[in-house]
Image (cartoon, rainbow, N blue to C red):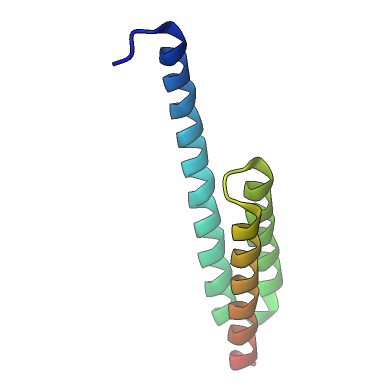
Length: 90
């Protein structure tokens, strides 16, 4: 355990950030899974779920939770996968 005042404060802020980042990453994963499942079930409703997932990914990249290139890769993979799902079921 740290006994320097500034390090104690740093540990507290790091823990707060870790929990906030963890929640945001979990939210991204959830939205991506929902978008994929909606695209498989009903392709006409896929655009709303896709838009929400992309919005969450962009927001995480803007806040520095994930890198901007990682966000671009995730969006690209998601859009390709949903395009395959909707064309296969159509």
